Image 1 (cartoon, helix red, strand yellow):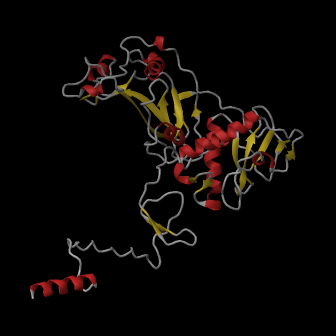
Image 2 (tube, rainbow, N blue to C red):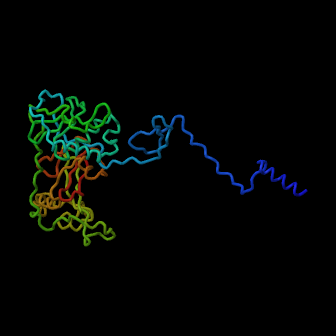
Image 3 (cartoon, rainbow, N blue to C red):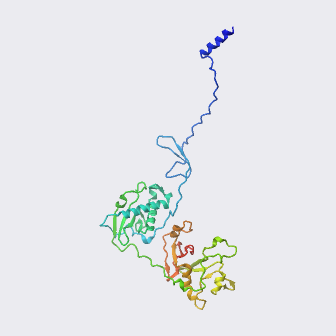
Length: 383
């Protein structure tokens, strides 16, 4: 009987009615559902980079999510001010004529393309490769950035404008100092805001000669020269803090920093400035007869009092020259080019010394100040 049962079980296994013996496999992990694609993705990617994540859909393919990246930050001035003294006449001036010589030197072309590269480096956030990030609407900004870099390299150049101030989509760049030829350089395609990278940039409009008076005014006269520093006798005004003069409690990091300031303000139609030794200059002020004022101890004073009848007053100009190393005027744009953290607003104003006085200048739209030539850390306020 047992033998018959064994034969029956074997027959069932052969017929496939019983599972084969062996280890039971565990179930696999569940397959995750595909990510849901938004019906209307937001935000959608826009070149050249991303601040937040965005969705991108290649032609004929599903939407793809692009993770966040960071746009490059500007490393320079993205709103430069052009030097008006290096500009061309208005675009619609009747004195423009086609120049006889239409040739363009390689040196001129290289200078322009170098300025393009410098403009990209100065304000990378404005560019998308060889195109303005804002497209056609950014062309004027692109020309402004390039024109400023050319001016920094000594070229006479300006955005092309008509007499009403309307900007045309090209630059005027002077062929060479002393010439009257200007190239109407067209650097961008008007259809897409991208650079014209070939020689067509210099031949779309070509060279023009200005047959009127020289469009570039003569150079500004240098500021008056002060008397030599050797005319200032003892006591000499102190220039920087030393370990021996540092007041008690002051940090050692002050050693070598300026011990004097330039103060000034409006005086009629000009800005009148004074170089003063301050603060904590009680001993020096006393040594030149300016140790008190109205019965109060004086610890900040000019390098000498005014004449007549005061201690060595005739040395004031010479002692100011010794302390400052000469003075210069600085525009806001120049200050920001040296230090982008300077707090001022660039404009097209110019700065001009007056009254043959190296400490007086005309106020100029809120972006001029007086600075030391020897120590550029020392400047007056903006006017």
